[in-house]
Image: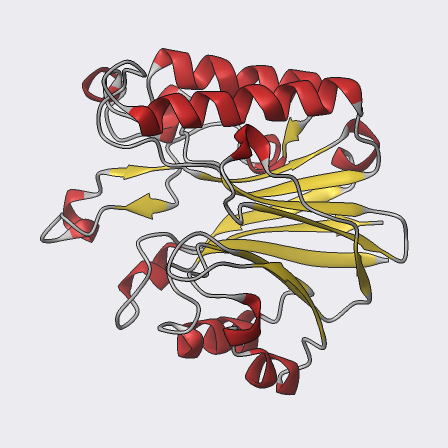
Length: 262
């Protein structure tokens, strides 16, 4: 059963309902995972998405912050969500397709502006969140699984516009990259995007602070699609929809796609 999956930090699903509908109409992925929905589950505009064929929705939400949702044309069963680091945040939800594939949708904490847990509580929370993700995947080794989401870390030198300039900037510091690598190793996860596109700079996020994001092109690849070894070989067709950053009132993230022949 081949299916196409996309992940997108939407930065308010209610504010950008029209952009989600446009993506669903123009690209028609079988599954769309959203992060930073910023509303309780009951306020997600599901009626409009269902009208476009996305009749299966599982989500975790909270007022004003965080929130993750999986919109699917395919039947999918809610199999829970973890509250890593005991933050009380809606940052993870998991669903299982009828073919047995589990999809994990994550929104990892951003970590604030100062890369020092003693000076910045949010940075410490981010590292703790990643540590508990690692421990979870060590104790419950995932199989037949895909992990997607805004992981808020650009791990490779070519995942950022300037490696040296960003070494002390949250999202690309060595300690964050190390923590993310430990999560990947614990679950034996494989980076599907880089499996398909092994070389060259790739970005999925451009700051709102840039007066001309396209010309400056100071991007980072914060949004990821991973898969366990028993699924990774079936992944292909990876792409990042850069033009979406230029839509009206856009999110600062763009969708990342992959197809799996399972």
